Length: 113
Ligand SMILES: [Cu+2]
Image (cartoon, helix red, strand yellow):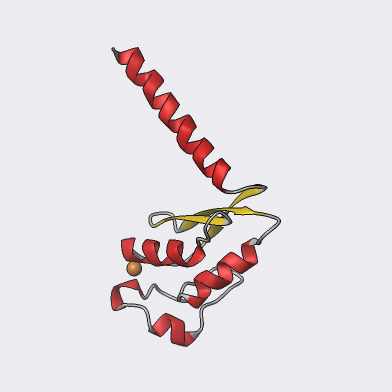
């Protein structure tokens, strides 16, 4: 029984990988640091960065590292990070405006240096 479980797990992992690949063509995956605090930040960051079939953002609130996968023929990392900055979140090269930052809920106003 244990080995069946392992095989099933492996199949699920494989399928979920294939699903992302099938959605985004010419995919490139990169990681980038984006400043934020909590689960709500995660939702906002990912919603701002995601673009159907073109870009997918997965932000880890513990490490503050976003894994972005995108179609290199349709967008680039800069464009994605600009959308995220417009939603109020800084990354190294793309800072959010004061207005966008101030519009974030209090719990989401991460420390800026
Ligand atoms: Cu937050």
